Image (tube, rainbow, N blue to C red):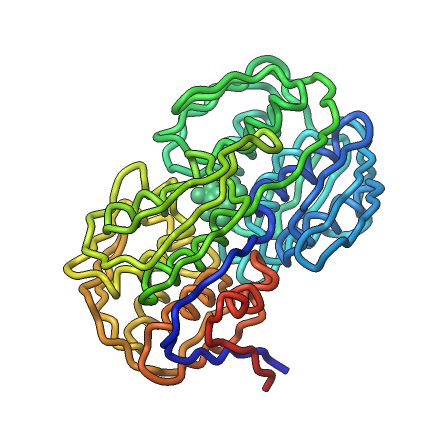
Length: 440
Ligand code: S3P
């Protein structure tokens, strides 16, 4: 049985106020770090999505006790009994990361510092994603990790780690975080120099847990070997999930929506800046700090969009949102060119090649380049059958595109949307979106 999504032309405005589920990056990190803290952590509004459930199951396999209050299908409260830096139990089988690249790469940093061997494995998709980017710097810290020619499964052997200075060559918060988490177990100082700022959730959380860590725009320095204090936090709504209803409201005429309680950490708001560059306007209301992260309610309305050139640091700050940005570009006047985004090619799927292939089926004028794409708009979109390729963000981007097509769009393989955004369809329906899940 597969789930497909039927999307009809959106002839009425999207209206209403919604919340989106918790931030995926923060939910992964909160569970992993709470597992190695001293004492009981409380994590509210945690994201129960496919990817983060892999993390939760895996820490339980490492002997961590978790009490779960499933207060809603979209937000759980967790109470996690931390076992300290050295209290995890050896797993009896490989840890299954499913589709979660963030979990696999970050957990490799923690497991590299343990006194027992472990294996990290994942889905067929995750087995195709590059792991040398973390294996190489971790090896420089002394880690012993073998792999299938740079791909999962990764076999990790116990060893003593040492801090070092790591000059990054790609912009990746996952790589930075893997090194920082290994740094918790390392002798001396661990220093990471980035080629540009990437999301800093690991740094913020480690600081909140009492780790000796300092960071600025493109460097971070920490000292390990100290116990972590437990967390008491609420996870803010994921700006990467909010991007889908936001783009939908921007392109469906007369729409006006508010997404409440969204994380607006400056390392994550690239999508808002890119859309502003295309003529969209937002109001950020009720700005506050929650769980050590800046949060706001985002009000957005339909805008006439124009093209924009997207490159440089905004790309890292909105890397996961570029597929849905491409959908906004289909409705913008002119050529929207995205470059410096070669990382898109090594996400859940090749998010340049596959995106271009699927959008072309809807009549979008999109051309690929090695590190990005160009969309020429505005396009009259024609209904077609498209495929998520088992990639949550591609599936949801195609669903948003479907609202602007003439006729009936069928998005094949929609179940993957719950990897990051459980309740995506219901949330969009609550705004009046013309979409429904069908089983076949
Ligand atoms: C993430 C970092 C990004 C992002 C991914 C989540 C994280 O990946 O694309 O969805 O939580 O650190 P990279 O670090 O590989 O760019």
